[in-house]
Every structure is written in C-alpha cells, then in structure tokens.
Length: 343
Image (cartoon, rainbow, N blue to C red; front, side, top):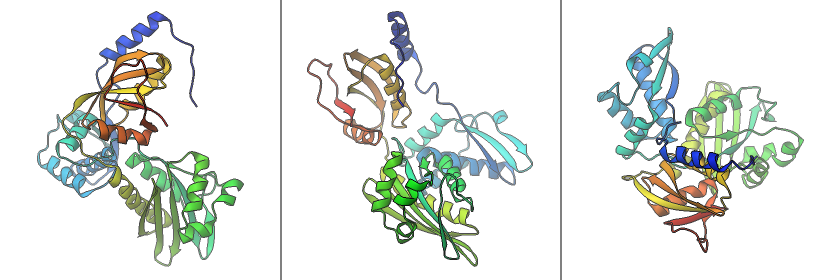
C-alpha cells in the first residue's frame, strides 16, 4: 500500500522541511462534529458531550461520565464547545454540535481520565446469527439482521476500527460457526490474519421470543475479554455486547498523561523525505503526541523532537501498537532518548 513518489528537488525538500518546522501543532486536527437526537438543546448538549468524550477517550467509563457532569456544571461555551452560533438545530429533534478536539483532550488530561492515546487496534468480527437453530456466518454480502451495520456505527462512534470479513468460501472454511458459538477463539484469531487484523471479535447473536441475546469475546494481545447483552433485536443486542467488549480492551490500553515534555525519538530505517513525512503524520495522529518536529535527518534514520505527556519508556511501549520496537542506534546516528524501528 506504500507509495514511492519521485524524490523531490532540493528546493522542494528545504521548503517542505521549513513548513514542517513552522506548522502549528494540530493544524490539521479539525473540530469534532456530531449530530444527536434529543428533546431539547440541553439534552442534546449532554448527549453530544458524552459521545464526544467517549470517542476521544476510546471507551465509556465512569471517569468519562463523571467528567461530562463536571463540564456541564462549569459550562463554558467559548471553551470546550465551539461558539454558540456553531450549535444549531437541523431538524425538530436533531442538533448539530461542533466541539474543539484540543480542548476536550486537554480536559481529559487535566481530569486524569484514562484514554487510549496510541493506535487503536483493528479487530476482525466473526459473527454468527442464530435464528431457530439456523446459523449463518455474517460477512460483507450477508447481514440480514443488520448486525454488522450496527457494529460499523459503533466503531465510528468509538473511533475503534472493526473489520468485517468477506464471508467468501475461504472464510467459511476457516471460520466454523460451531467455533464461534462455542467460543473457540484460537482458529478464529488465526483466520483473522488474512485481513492483517490486530485481533478478533467473536460474536454469537441468537434471536429469542422477547428479542435477541448476544455473547461476544474480544481477543487482543493474547487476552480474551467476554461480554453479553440482550436487546429488542439482533442489531441492538450485538451493539451492546460488543460495546462492553471494546471498553474492556480499551481499558487495558488507556493511560493518563502527565505534564508534557519534549523527547528526542530516533527512528531507524526511514529512507528519504517522503518516508519521514509519513512517519511524522503517523505520530501526530496519536493522542499521546501533541507535536513532532524534525531534529535531524541523515541516511536511513531520522531523529524527531516529540512533545508528549508520556515518559520515554511509556511512549516506546505505546508505539508498539503502531508496529514499532526498540532498535539499536546507528553507528553514526545522532543521539536520541530512545531508538525505534519497524518490527
């Protein structure tokens, strides 16, 4: 998937470096826009603020809900929410809300609320819909009860990527409905490697006389997280069960940052200006990284000055989720607090 454009001219290279050095942190990090359904503006604001904080934190936790209450009590429309004219009713029961991401992230940090600061894991969903004993593997072309559609909406709301299988012959051979129903995860995790997923989410949705029941097992980094829920229909039950599972995965990954400091991170195997640009963009997408600027670029290595609320070791551990591991310093490389390279 990597692109390899032609090497830029010396002038373009210098201008590009100058732009990167002068560009303000988070310049491309736009507002968080939500549309919520509510009876009135006050209810819309409460629901929207909760959704925004859950999305930025990566999980729905007691700490997040407590912060929602505190911020509503100390309401500041010029601070954590954009100006009043940017909040509008788009229909009788629908409101469009626009939040300042940076201010909400700062509120999470200042309140000591754990948040997923690194790359969020992509889990492949193996789901079986069970109706009257007839079991069907759900996939790209098969989603009769709308289960995968509901999970797609949940993934967007949580900013936690969920991957859905094609459901083709290869999937049907690798992922047996009996394993999904029985909670046998090992072959399903192995089958998820086809999609380069970080783990698997095993879901059994069963229709009942009163609605539906769902059981989910989230598998990530060698651990299993189990959850269950019931709902009025398969989609509602599945969404609730998976939401609880994602919260458990995110809880283990969540961290609280301290006061921000500048660290010098060295990266081996970064060849050329285009690779450096991609690396910098990748780092600044992480909530743990407030800013990243060039320190030195030589040969196939680069040193960046990175501003973060995590210390050197915690930041290096967090970057493991983005595919980095500790590396030896180049023989003639610049000094850095820690050296990293692609695994």
